[in-house]
Image (tube, rainbow, N blue to C red):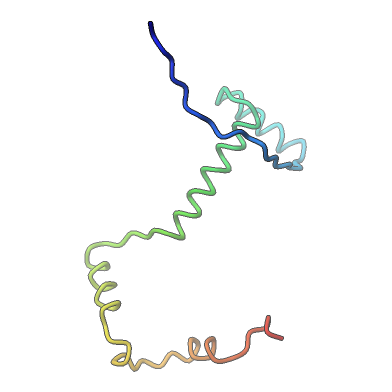
Length: 101
């Protein structure tokens, strides 16, 4: 006797509503036909892919081996030994923010 095991899926209880122009809707609909999927599935997959890409850009960066070595060397330096004057950074860290009123 064969038993089919289906993965447990989180129930989709949240909604996201979008307003689009007729032209935008037509472009999305054409893409859905090509992808053989529903508008909801297409928009969800495209949005999630872009969100994951954007978040990955904030978490990961790629360096060539020489650049990585230079980066690690900078991290390993004693900050007290680095006497380079950075006026913009100093101003950023010492002046009140526009949000502080």
